[in-house]
Length: 330
Image (cartoon, rainbow, N blue to C red; front, top):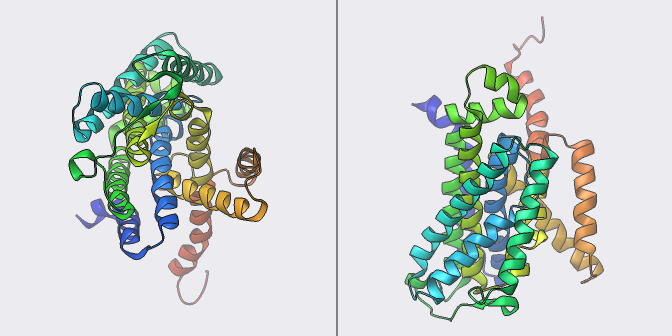
């Protein structure tokens, strides 16, 4: 029992820390920073499941983020239904979108840069359609009416909403940890390392890829719904903009590809550094993109395993020293 629960201990520890945050933080600025960062980390976790574990890099995860946000907004504003079912609808639509894109791309045998460009193209097509459709509010976007209440996923204080975001983040972390130790997780890693060898060993490559992109789309769409409920506004440039595709990719790479905690660590590091840069140089246009580009170069060149990988390498020598007998090495 203890050995089966051990992999979940880091997730539980992080969950406890995040759960304490709404109780300890009193500044609205700090609460806002953590809420937005965790929403991005949730979307990054979706990207990491497909790109980090499965090796299928996507440049257009904004497609799932935007579909989730718009599906929930339309569900509430056009049909007058509640936000909780809107959350479920947004998540489901993200999964369906992932399955459709995955079937078209993987069935055609696209992989690597070709698959990445296809996802980018889908995100751009969705942006153009949302920007010109009356159903989505066109260029003006969609503004949810202010209706404070738990049933509307609108709360009078930021701490309560942050608690909801923390709960969903920990739930997804637990899910990804479970997938990592499952047969499906092993199949994903096998595809990442060598797709032809995995196929030769009997792995149903198409089915595994579709499962991965379906789950990835669902998780990322959930983040889109949370973003909508937090700001109560969405438009095409926010929902399907390149900003979210870039941020989720960077958060996973900087934190550690194929790790459970990597997207959360990466999102916290990126947003924290971004706030420091803004405080130092002010609201200089494009400075965030320049900083993200520099971080990506540094991460790829010097942190191949991301921040989580760096922490593991630092901890490994200590564990070796502790394992040695008191008399030293033989």
